[in-house]
Length: 51
Image 1 (cartoon, rainbow, N blue to C red):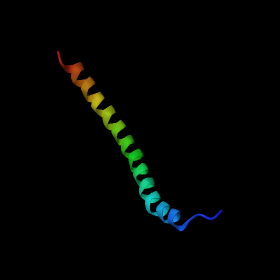
Image 2 (image 1 turned 135 degrees about the vertical axis):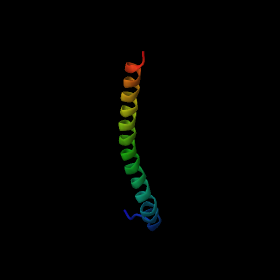
Image 3 (image 1 turned 30 degrees about the horizontal axis):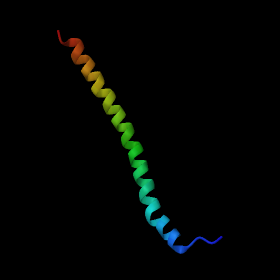
Image 4 (image 1 turned 90 degrees about the vertical axis):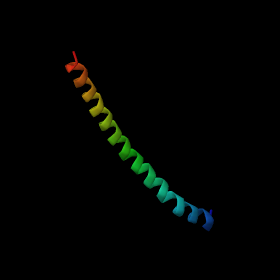
């Protein structure tokens, strides 16, 4: 079975950007989780020290 040239071009043009976006979203998600933890810790400290 032969793959049409149009499909190969579409995959090469679209596949890389999709893969790049997926990779960046995974990295950003980890950063957001760390930021969320830091904010939660700060709120806990503020609530603990507030009379």
